[in-house]
Length: 149
Image (cartoon, rainbow, N blue to C red):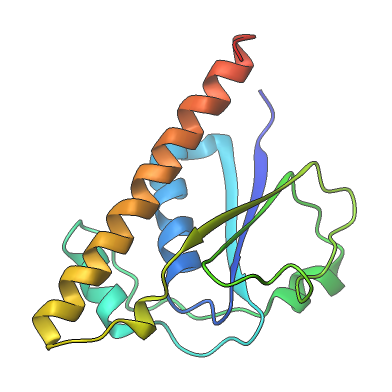
């Protein structure tokens, strides 16, 4: 099976898309070439770095990337997946040659409120939801590969 190229997009490439990229790289292995980017890149959210670190993922050196840099480079993707709860459909560029465009809405870790521990609990819940979605999607893809629907 050829390597599938996947780009995860969210607003700032600071949380959701970073987590999705890390999980797909880990769970999907060499079957995928995975990238993430944002429409308005900032810096990786420290709570996300901490939450992912709890599972053994080191995002402390990750840098955010601009989705339009990928677009201008002409890089082709099999899947472009937006992971923002808010709708970004009008803002996202159309990638040439795209096979599938998916939208998986997750809450923004930067918008969680409460004490530090309450915020971390909410970030962990978002992290776990993203991991679960990636695992489910991989099972779905494996089913398609076997001719199941």
